[in-house]
Amino acid sequence: MMMTKKQWEFCLDQFAEMFPDAHCELVHANPFELLIATLLSAQCTDVLVNRVTSVLFKKYKTPEDYLSVDCEELQNDIRSIGLFRNKAKNIQALSRLLIEVYSGEVPPNRDLLMTLPGVGRKTANVVVSNAFGIPALAVDTHVERVAKRLAMNRWKDSPLAVEEKIMRWTPMNKWTDTHHQIIFFGRYHCKAQNPGCAVCPLLPICREGKKRMKTNAN
Image (cartoon, rainbow, N blue to C red; front, side, top):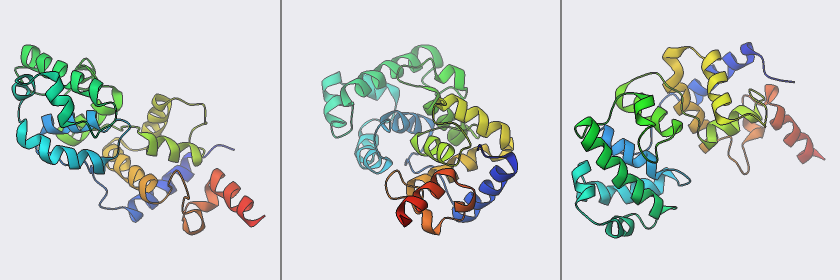
């Protein structure tokens, strides 16, 4: 049975109560740094990205800086991050486009951001919501997992379907906070492995949690 909108409203209250201070954990000082950090975070933890960018952002501060070195040097700077070769190429390509089309500035528009190399919908949503305060709801692995475990969405649903459903059932002024709260919920409580079902306030309405608890009892 799929979750009802009333149940989702209960979830929103619980997310907010459990993680009132949820926020973007990618360390950044401006929209450009957030764009680079979010691009680097694909299939990588925020902890590792922050470790790398703590050095990277001292060396490279502008799009011009990333184009002042050859790609191999940039690859070496981010080598500890997965897919570092493609990410280095994309960083230089988007830096070139930012200079040529946007005067070196990050555009505050999701559709424009998605024209940049290596920038998909999730990355664009993260940037517009956190850097520019534009309501958006990025769906990463945590958000997708939580939505599907709770039967907010079906397991076969795409990330876009998850995004659209959550946005329909969540007030627009709460999209950004809800995004962060669900991420914290998935990252620190409803983990991919060993989720905290036994102490979860959502257990009474969680499809997967009930299954897991029943299986453990047997």
